[in-house]
Image (cartoon, rainbow, N blue to C red; front, side):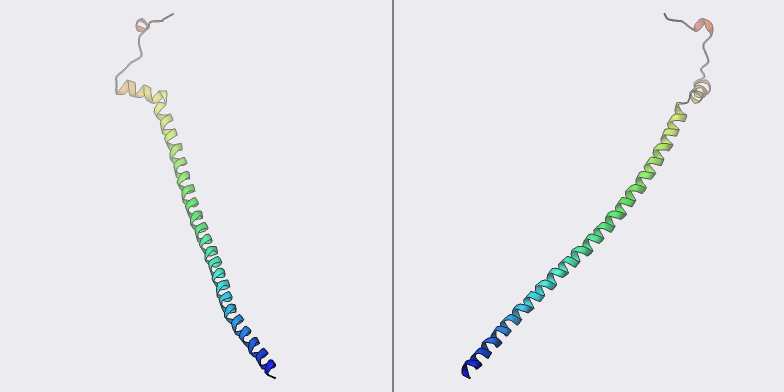
Length: 106
């Protein structure tokens, strides 16, 4: 009987020892799962921030393209020969040269 009692005590000690190891294992697994969940949430938040930043940059690009088109149109009107002729006649009081003022070079 004594041998059976010693065997039972040994089994109880092993159960107690494995129980404490089990708790630490569960805590470790829970910690890993929490870390993975936090990483997942952080990555989604980061992706959302990047999406907003991309949207802002695309909007800014569209505004710059519109401004460039307006500036090209303004440059074309500034270079127009009719505008330059009007400024030369009205502001600078220039006239076309007469025939005797024209010299042809060969």
